[in-house]
Amino acid sequence: MYKTLASRLTAQFQVDGSHLDRYLGLQGTLKRSLLEDLILHDQILIPTPDFLTADGLILIFGEKGIIDLLESERIKFIRTRSVMGFARGSGKDGGLVVFSDPENKRPQDSDIEEAVVAGLNVIEGYLKEKDKLKTLVIQNSINVETTEILAAVGKESIADFRKSAMWRPRFATHNLDLLALPELTNMHVKVIGNSPNPLGSFVDTLLSLVMYNSDLFLSRKFDCVSTSSFFPIGDLLRIKASRAGNKSNDLWKLFEVNSIPDFSALDFNASDDFRALHKATMTSNAESFRKWFHSLNNWEESEILREYLSVLHEVHWTQKLPTRIIRFITTTGLGFIPVVGQVASFVDSFAIDKIAKKNSPKFFIDDMRQLAKTKGLQKGNRGRKK
Image (cartoon, rainbow, N blue to C red; front, side, top):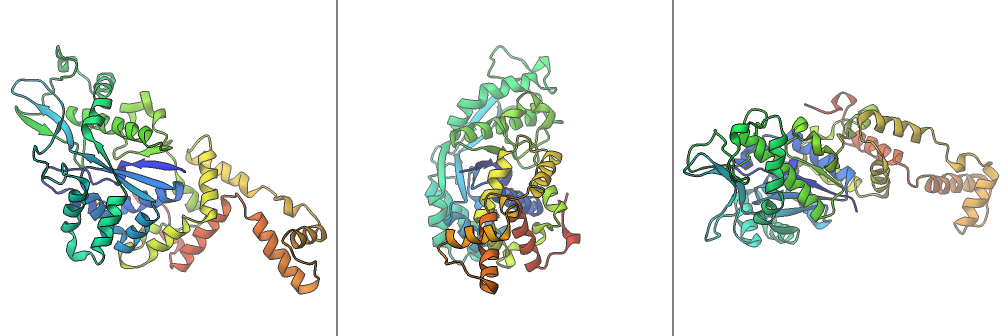
């Protein structure tokens, strides 16, 4: 099973509770991200401290579509209980902390069941199958304590920060776990939020590194083949980029050159289009495409296109044999008595197609092109939107 850790699909916690509204403002990006992950992976793990992320997915992709994903276990939530941030004390120094409600009443700190109910209550007026969604979200949620994550990645993240271009010697203190970062006033805490600025904020740099390392930790913990982080940190993390498993792939360029439009242009919430797309990613052709894609040594755009072109130029063994031999193999092999004329011709085309359509990525591309036609998408609407 190909699993991915996708924090780019997370509604990043905001202290003022605005993370759902901010999340809904990213619909175009979120549509493409989820579609890409469904095509390339069997299961998507989404870390989130509360379930406003689930609300956002329901509002964007539709209630029925998310129920399909949950019932087929295509998505699961890693509920990272409590919230992590950088806190400054009464002096000049501060450190990474987990802060929570001592009574565990906030959705970020309560039990999963209570957190799911609190999340779904926010969009209760929209839901037709709230009880079913509640059961499915609870069944597909895994609890991980944020204290466990911080214990695993805190020191590593500070060490990474010291190696980054944003480090200044004046940040050092006698305690290696504490840093004298100048941006916060006394007794204040900052979380990563939805709009981090790691190249302009020292605290955001540190928190971005914490988030990145947290993704790697969770990815290892749940045996994921790749991660797609919320924020592409780029140069800050060149020293460890190979650990992420997400080699800057460009699936959408492959779709574009094959005349497959941008499906994210569809209004998934107002139709069954998303359910049709999800169904297409669960076929044997989709499975063959995933196996091919993950077998590539390099996921750069040029390498993907080169490898795909080599697939198109392959001559299947069925095309190398005389028709008479193919007819004998397919009819007897499938338990038929050899026949002639129009019936034999039908058997040839049906059986040979069935044999030839094994383990090739091109057939999933054909399926997606045909699906785009049935949904009325035009070539002019294709490609990745910025």
